[in-house]
Image: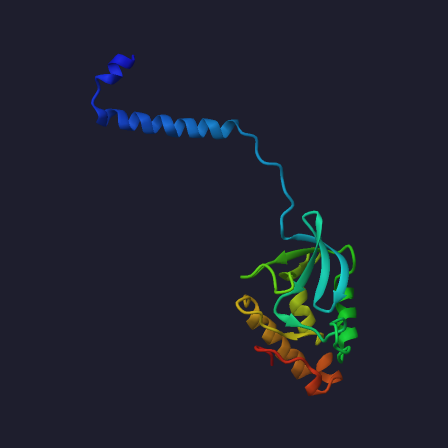
Length: 187
């Protein structure tokens, strides 16, 4: 058989060799076992609240500090910073929305982490798909804070802040204007 192949013109061997390579790749791929399933990186369970815009969650078998993207709440635990107006209320509200054990879906934007190593995410409760970031702004517990280039939901977050401010919800009526955090993209 090899003698007959040796006498064939080279141009006839090229399709035969290409077919053999493709066949070997396909058959080789079929004999491999599929990789074991790995927890999706967007699946997490709340472990602990840090403050109004940061919490710890179990992600892929380890704890991660999660920073809610696109928003800022008044400070309660920042070193060398006094507790700000409506800070305790904002932390309590986040704790009510995300009690320990709550299953959440984490949606990332352009950057994975901030300068402090926290995982940046838009957070949705799995039980009812509540968009936690927008909910906190809509109800007056947070203000928009654009983390450029992470701005996938900036328009939605800003619109929620405009509504909250117009209605005087939360920090918009409880705090003096000077005490409300102001960030680019805020109302």
